[in-house]
Length: 348
Image (cartoon, rainbow, N blue to C red; front, top):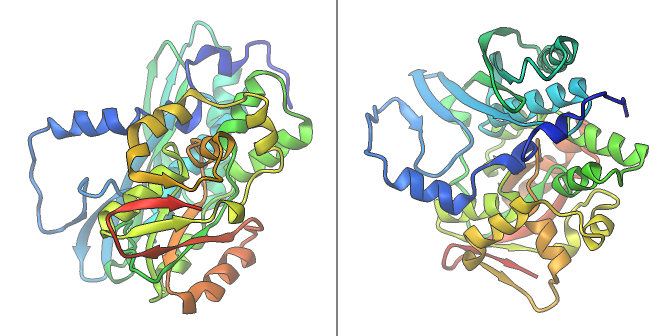
């Protein structure tokens, strides 16, 4: 890990997708808003808390538009830029879209951070955009108290291949593309508890672009896709279940975890966002008697640049797993299934 004179994580009150406003608070804020214009071309808006807005421009093309930004989750500025850019572009992939270009969102304490550090953050974001094959075509900067970086990401999708988070069906299997535990690792990082190998594993996960999305979108047996970020696995699966009017089951023993995630939770390295997440949506979750507090912390752990969560027919599972594995997602796992019943999640 690169040593910085000023630790980026010490300049922010929270890091990565753990900075998100708690789900229950966000719901109250949005509930008070007056409904705006909803044209027929707006295929996806705010109604199911999906990953991006989608606006149809002709029978074969729709624009995918999203934005994501946050405070540092790591101290290395280049890595922070890479993680933030990867996370933002992920929402385009989650809709089945292909990214076109990005705009940078930059807020920096310019009197505190060296200009070279700020430049490294932007350089990291640009490197990920280059890997995704897209330009950073502009953006906006402000002088802020805390360092903030992210992107507006714009993409295209064929409306026939659009994958929403509200299409899951009873009988579907649930597949998760990345290991859980990023929030736990970030908490351990702040306490200097990560080994170099742990940090490398965290960076490898959070900077891996969710490129299987557009390929999965072309499979008829794939019914719903979302990415797991700040609300944790349970929060984003609950959004799928509520939007689809189905009930999900997760088998905790089948969840892919970063190698030391459980160990770090047992040592007390848990983000405050994990508890806020549970307080917000725990009423919609039933935990089996064998699911302990460590497991609950991992299920609610905020993931920064997390994996795709896919709901597909049993017959499509092998093909979905193959797509992930061919693109280097070694932790991809079948973690549960979708059934009938009141919208919610059972963890067994």
